[in-house]
Image (tube, rainbow, N blue to C red; front, side):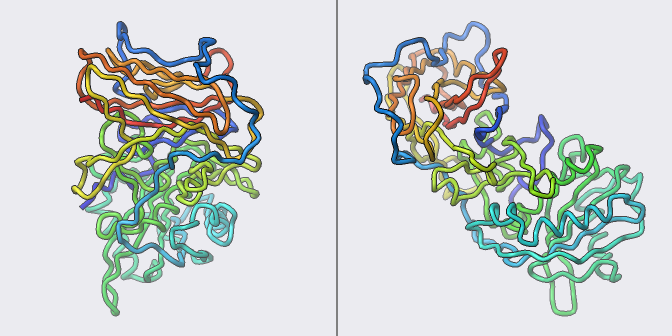
Length: 442
């Protein structure tokens, strides 16, 4: 049984974060998560940065394509064998007295019935068009209560279906339940609006025709207004349709690749929206603020894997070749790509390649270090990473040299090569994308 933690719509900065961040798009900064491997004062690790030395590779040709250049690929989500909601039927559930009832119903309907967002985030996952237009309004017996998901909410959902207050589910049903602001919800000992913003799960419901494992999404009201609610709801909807039964029959999931971690080197996991939670949200044509979600097809085509992207976005990055190891995760057959293995007292060199999916307005500036909020930090004592050249564009080959002193501590380090398109003001990180790796020092 998998830890349901991976189904959460996490609050920014929550200690429960478990999925990897996607790189920023070209329309703004990307605040990367802090790593518990950031060097302490006195570390002699160096962060590769432009210093006027463009290396020994000579002048690069102009950025004339073809785009993108051949490069080491971004990872793909795995289908673990579970079923998806192939033709989702969204049932919008509110409680009497919710002043936003009609707006929430309209939002759910707009989301699933052929929206551009829906078409973008469902691509390649076996999910087709959704339907809405089915609503349930329940008596408000939940205000000022603290409800546990397993011991109270699931029995409530089963009871609402048994009484006819909720329509009976089928294989494609998703209940999206919007709770009042005064209702607190606990999940595995964690409190809503403190550790997490929303989540999804499933529960067994006995009907005359058999037992259904019915999918549901729980959307607390955390006081952030409609924008926060629509981000949370879109996040959970896309996860619930691509992984509707996370504990009993998992479907699309990302395991233990550095792209699928929120930061640090703790083995992590995530669903399609979890791993893009740190990417920017996006507004649709109707003004709804929506979550982005990982799309395998976009990653395979060298586009921003966190979709949908804004019109005219150019995605770029510096692809670092890595190796696949047994991560020691849930089972031995879960292999993790994204590792670079270097023995203490040795130096490794890697041939990285800059790529973009269209011509960039200027060359990228390259740095390397531990992923952190804002600027990259030192990787660790005795670890020195240099890049040559330190700038370039689509097709530029970059030698990544990793020198590990014999005194370095043998462990896994979170690291990344960062490609910056526009420098930030007042020392900010600017506009960039990261290629994350796990540096395994042996």
